Image (tube, rainbow, N blue to C red; front, side):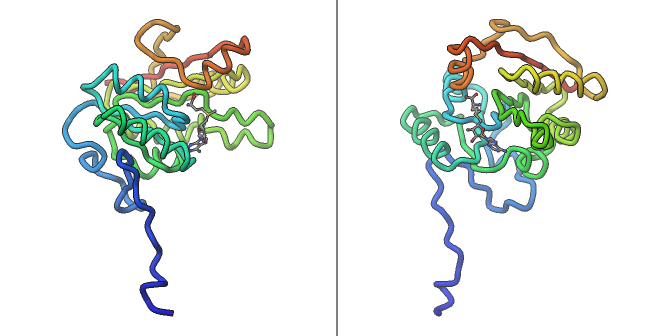
Length: 208
Ligand SMILES: C[S@@+](CC[C@H](N)C(=O)[O-])C[C@H]1O[C@@H](n2cnc3c(N)ncnc32)[C@H](O)[C@@H]1O
């Protein structure tokens, strides 16, 4: 077999996609977005409706959506290109890996985790993202005074998070109710609310 045929082929990134040159080292902030504008990251961004509304509303901030499903990444990336949103990029990667190993330290002003998979079965609870080692990693990537916003429709997952926060040191808990500030509803939030479910919110701030 010719050597060239044995080379792995790299997928061509979409226009608004951030494909790191090296997945095994922390990225530089400049690689994600040049300049010193605040960066917000949405973990598991799904159909991207929240991110697109945020990017339009805050043209002076940058937004990175993280999503493991390629089809969703492509769709959101195309929408961002169509709408000429230069401040929005997509990363196709696993959320925990992104926070623990890829994002540069002290670079994120707000990290959003909205309607994540609740993993309701007890034997799957260890797959939940909201756990102390993950919170340690969140603290590493936030800028001083940066925030981690967690929202779920799942009461038991929310209790789990609140219970962790009774013991976890290192964040200040800020009040957060719907309508406190501009915060578009996510696609899943709209679906759950249409079914009569309510949202539970936790807003954590890294001391500045
Ligand atoms: C329940 S949906 C919520 C989507 C969006 N945040 C919303 O509220 O509409 C969860 C999304 O996270 C993605 N996802 C789940 N686990 C993930 C992981 N470990 N890393 C990256 N994306 C993940 C799924 O593919 C899906 O798009």
